Amino acid sequence: MLSLEKNGKDKPNVGILMMIFASICFSLMAAMVKFLRHLPVMEIIFFRNIPIMLIIPLILKNKKISFWGNNKPLLLLRSLLSSFAAIIYFYTITVMILTDAVTIKQLSPFFIILLASIFLREKIGFRKITIFILAFLGALLVVKPGFRLDIYPAVIALLGAISTAGAHVAIRSLRLTDHLLVIVNYFGYSAGLISLGTLLWQGNFIIPDASSLFVLLLLGLAGLGAQFALTKAYQMAPAKLVSLYLYLQIIFGALLGVLFFKEIPDLFSIIGASLIIVSGYLNNKLKIE
Image (tube, rainbow, N blue to C red):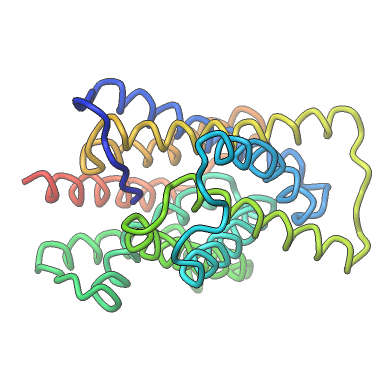
């Protein structure tokens, strides 16, 4: 996960509250994307990144931080991986049950462990392997290979989780060379320009009606709020303490799916999501111990 320099003493309670707020924002984003599924995915992504493209450069200019950063190749790679993951995530939200899409996305921390062992030479202990197997079994119950014909979106969602993991492994290196806001700015412009270019190439831009435009604006603000809350959480408390609360997205996603879209997860998905949450808890407990 992200790592930031701390100013002053840790404030664990504030960090936890900020992470809970970030999880709520991420969950609301997912629900809004599903509400906007009548619009092209690229159009949704473009609107989602407008606040980042408008606000973050102003903050960078005010802080007199270079827009271009230091490790440009890795900044660009991370941005492309995150953009690819965002496109996949938004797509799967529109075609899958909300809980399933959010649950599969939460597998990314376990793929981070694998990728970090390969590219960063971080060792994986036996207990970590056991936890990963537990999470993988949970994923199988959510994906349900062989149990249904519409497995394609679930497989795509897994690729998105792997892309997210790759982006976070890149962030582990970038935190040593570049300011967090520079990293966020690269992502905002990469995803924004890719989505805009794709929209122009496909020529399928749909002028949103008043209600859709309002939700698009809320989506962008929720995305920006999530980024800032996430950042603040890691400033106020250690990652090993607050990162666990990201798994609340699964619970919030399930509630929003039931309330607004009448989507009730089946028993396999409920058990699978529970296994992934338990795996996340054990993974964080292992870090603390």
